[in-house]
Amino acid sequence: MLKRIVAVLLSAVIALGLVACAPVTPSAPLEIRSGVIQQISATQIANNHETGVGAVIGALGGLGVGALIGSGTGKAVAMVLGAVGGAVGGNELQKHYDKPVAGQQIFVRTSSGVLVTVTQPTGDLRVGQKVYIEGSGTEARVIAQ
Image 1 (tube, rainbow, N blue to C red):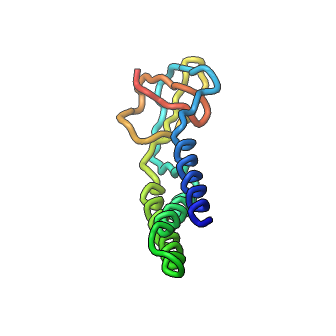
Image 2: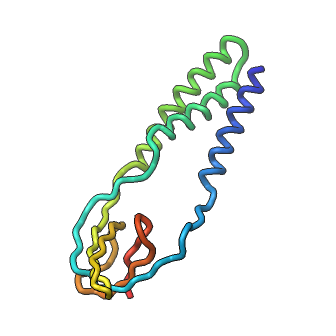
Image 3: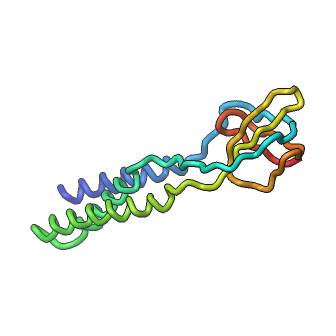
């Protein structure tokens, strides 16, 4: 019975990993606009990771490893220790990836006269430079012409 539970939990972890790696297909055609950079402001970009996911995946992995050790009471203790250790390790690993990154808030005056703001990781752009704005919404990026 315990082996079946461990097998189901490990299957769930593998399925979650595969789903997380699935490619995202764009929902709309790529929009490209041209313009000139009017202003650039330094900013910090927060990550988009879900909090707690590292701890949950770590706990499930630790539980699975603990289930492979010992038998009887020793197996139960190994499973608990594996789950707790995996949760702590997964949480610490996630903290490493949760740090904000340096970014730029770029104000671009498009050729149609509209002022567009895009926030993206720091690059080698400068005020007065001719650029393209690729995409729209949160997927928009400013690139040099």
